[in-house]
Image 1 (cartoon, rainbow, N blue to C red):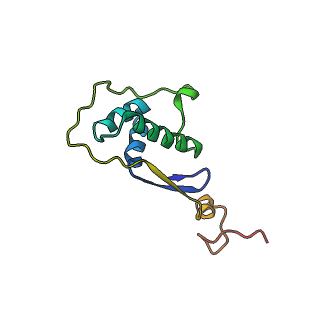
Image 2: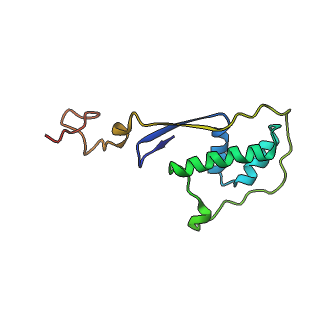
Image 3: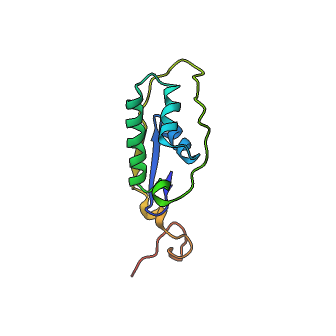
Length: 126
């Protein structure tokens, strides 16, 4: 994923892609933890701590907005318990890795900030 405000880009591994999709669909942390419990044998408090840490990192990177603080609406989700469909698998904590090596290119305006030779040559201030 890319933060177009900062030019940072990210990779997600472990359970991070699934949790990211759940958050994008409007699920709250309790729902995500409940769903993870159906797939993994870890204690709920371990799952909750991992999901909370991941969500906090997303907030810090401005990749996630807390709708409750901003007064936004939340998508209604089913409150029906999710039942396991397969044996538990090992829990892989959500991991987000931040890359800044291409910030200059990602933040470059390809119409206005290039020299006459064109993209991706940035204009020099000379």
